[in-house]
Image (cartoon, rainbow, N blue to C red):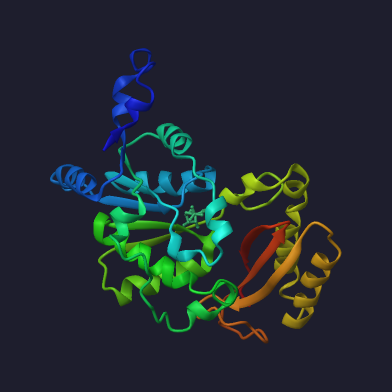
Length: 306
Ligand code: AMP
């Protein structure tokens, strides 16, 4: 266990000490668990926000919601190896624990950071469980990132069992993940409520993401195409067929030298199956994955009810 105060030992005297004590970094599950046990003796509920770090305002919006609804909030910061199918992407994923702690420090409330190493969470068996999420895992991200959702399910199952949260908060930015987590807690019979949170965006529309740090200035500016294409599809959705919308979206990306489209899909929000045509009573969302150079960006947007 390492107190955030240690990071700032030199300046601690000059700062509000009580405020510093409200946030701690735990590297080991035993110490986190014993602190949680003592805090929850007073029947405080536990809110949990799982992250891979390199925190931004999108993450903070989840933590703020968790603080509003719970007595204590755990933010995990862990770059999970089993959900990466690309070794270079895993290696290059930004790791900024001190800056993350500083950012969380700006929020009011009791926050514990759990930043384990791989062994603390996985022991010496760094492997994924194999899940059947009823087909949700084969759609979109599942097609392009082999084993990704087994890795996500495995790490969340481990984290849920350490933290035992009352509620856990996930962004709609990773909408497929959110639906899979809802299925995961049924499969694993975990007593936790899953709360979905809306997407926070940069001022030009790009969804906030830890990966945005790796974009060049030009790539960052041009990546707003993802948002504008989704907006256009949202607007045209009542008037155009799925095939026409698919064409419009693909065309927009073909015209951009800065982004390479991996997929654009309109899918049913319940089963995430690609929609062939609109059916009354179903709800749909549009999903995009695109590369800016070697940086993979994803986004999605709800579509009007028909
Ligand atoms: P990550 O660190 O990328 O694994 O994200 C941790 C959580 O933050 C996930 O539930 C994400 O969906 C959520 N998240 C990431 N970016 C955003 C955003 N721009 N708006 C809202 N939630 C987000």
